[in-house]
Image (cartoon, rainbow, N blue to C red; front, side, top):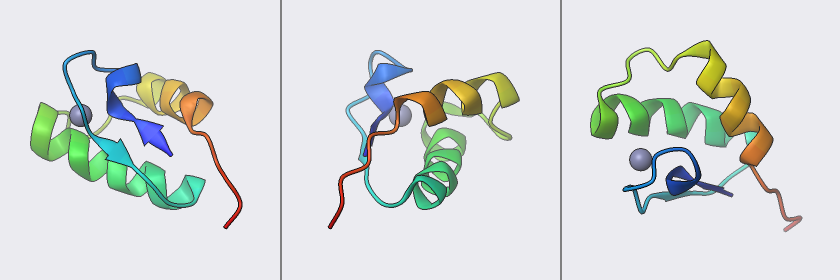
Length: 56
Ligand SMILES: [Zn+2]
């Protein structure tokens, strides 16, 4: 899971899925909600670092 608020303090969005799915969904969310289109490469690294995965 990834909490958008970990990167963008005012955002409550929580995104779930595999790491690859989350990165896709975050890119979509960031473009729609935060006007980040495309997502900056440096931010992708930060996001990947903050994704937590839980089996099942
Ligand atoms: Zn957000």
